[in-house]
Image (cartoon, rainbow, N blue to C red):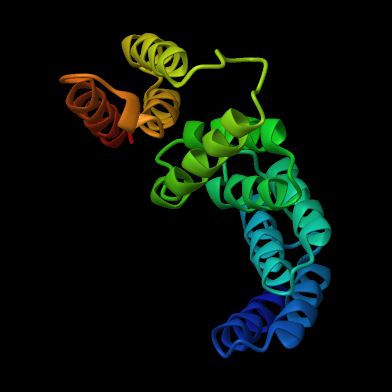
Length: 200
């Protein structure tokens, strides 16, 4: 049975690469059924994450979110699940939930999805700022100071993924930064990337 689900996954991946979304969707579902009780949690999370991406290609954001929720429940340390989850939450205008998913994604050990999470962090900050999110200051200057401070605190605690998230949120407002602020935040974020790489 282990061989069957893996072969089906390969067929699903080929269909995805061929942009045959409906076939990929069906085959990832079939692989999930064939792998039930055989595939380990990370393998199941991978299948769910891949199917979430296919659903996104079909603009089925609710279905994508459900698969991503299942993927993060199955293996909370699988960063692609958090990536898919945050993407679906953003498309469904659930910005605060997306921020929570992004925090979980950047906290995954050795997160290989970090480069894909960065634009989502920026998009999320833009949406939260435009909606005057009540959990952060209204002004860009206030948000910069808050997120720099939060990033510095996380960095000092060795929580480099969260530091990167806060520095990235501060950098969204870089046009409002004064003097050397932008260079300092970029340098701090680079240090957090280095800390994350060394911890992996």
